[in-house]
Length: 404
Image: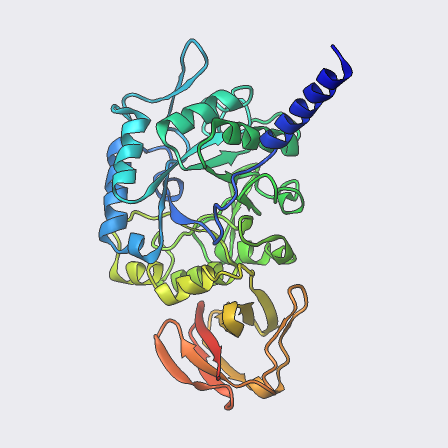
């Protein structure tokens, strides 16, 4: 082998590494929106359910509001064939995943699936360890659009290496698939996963309660407020194409209407993925109104992609700000206590500065029109002190637009 051939070979090898070491770009430029089966249905997943959920997403108005992914979580797997390729449980998915993906796509939606970086999934089904490239190829052939990748039964393997391997496998398979890491925040993925995944879990699993932790005997799941508190210090790591994920929504699963509204509002302020976890086929009017409030969704989907921050907290009444495009701001007053809370917010004496991303409200120089995003009413401007009462476990959410 002459020196030119040798150099060419090295170049091709290094170029191949560069090609593999990528995630799909131009995905998740705003926080992903969709639905996942786990919170409501656990292992009770099948083809009929997924088809009916896709139908309901369209019929309820959720698709029109921006939701697009239908994600099948754990327990869909049947096993592996003689060549090691994964296949679905034929009793649950008699027509196979390709036919199901085709149906979901026919609705203008996208299909997601679940696997695990370990030898087995959290529910004990075959994981992807050692089969990453085969699984990625299978997902691409089926027409999958989203992969949630969990972290059970990983036997102390390196998470950066494990998730990078699946990222490379997905890229090599050639179909753009959104990569959602579910490592529970154990190894601080926000510090290293920007070039690996499109979103990463920052906490353990969410639980249907306002402010509690649930003991599963060896691990905990967390109420909405507990998870909200765990987002402190993470906002600088999020942005278009790489999002902090505080887990799926519990809206419609048993919280009060006030709590559902607060939960949805705070996930919007966090620029979090909006992945519903309820039964879309059987929703109350209030649940539909919360999940499809396009003015609140617009805050979440703002093109700046900046995560909101807590400005202050006085006696469990929190004030949050989120910079938006075109000089606008979202403001959310969150009442965490068990009694109503009175707001008296004098815009002119507050100096709200986003020190990480360099935005400032400058209320003493700029007057903003105010719109209440849940009442869907314009309510004046920032020349006057804002006075209101926030019900217990609820929010008032505003959008501020500078006067021209």
